Length: 192
Image 1 (cartoon, one colour):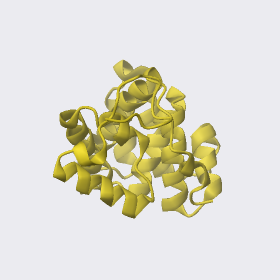
Image 2: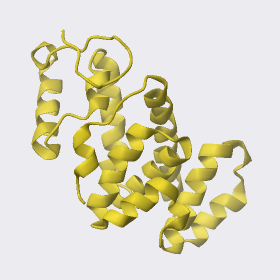
Image 3: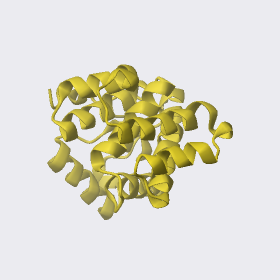
């Protein structure tokens, strides 16, 4: 087992890739190929293969699975939630994804700082307002909030997806912040 540098503040050794099951070795190789790196969040989870598989499967299903939400919209939710939670890891990592999917470096930065300052469509603003409210006061969400999403063009299935993406990032933000998970340095310069 080896400790990857700059992953978390916890002293939990991660296995080498050769020590991981074959499916996870292939998944990590696919990350290397597509991203040019292994995201530190995956390295951090690698010490518990069951958690790694569950995390990876849920992440990939939410972010890349069938949905009425575009990949950009899902990344925008990730950044708005992470900005609200002040999660450094996810602001950096998903800010890079917003830059990639939008082709607009400025949008990625605005989303990290304050999505309300960005030039967004009414649909995007309604979606992010809902995700932000879920993050700060989920107990207060009611039918008028869901109706505002419907009025912006979202189906009830889309609302389910918005809630699940926002909920996922609220969980991962809290874990990342609690263990001082650090983003890969490569994220800072991507898609600028």
